[in-house]
Length: 75
Ligand SMILES: [Zn+2]
Image (cartoon, rainbow, N blue to C red; front, side):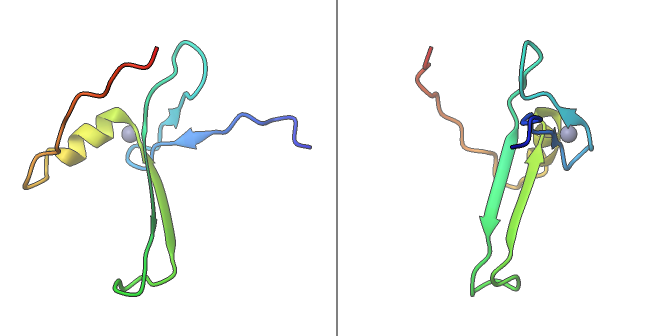
């Protein structure tokens, strides 16, 4: 068993280590995509994380803005 179970996540956009635990915990975007037959990457699983700043930077370049809706609070 590995005692060090703390997972270290890094933002693929800026390379920063993301804090996933404790008071400095932050919410991040994790994208996982299994490319299929109709792509040029058939059978490849791609995974990346983005911190909120990088996410905001990237979505600014979208032609169509991100669709937003309110999620019920789950406290
Ligand atoms: Zn980042």
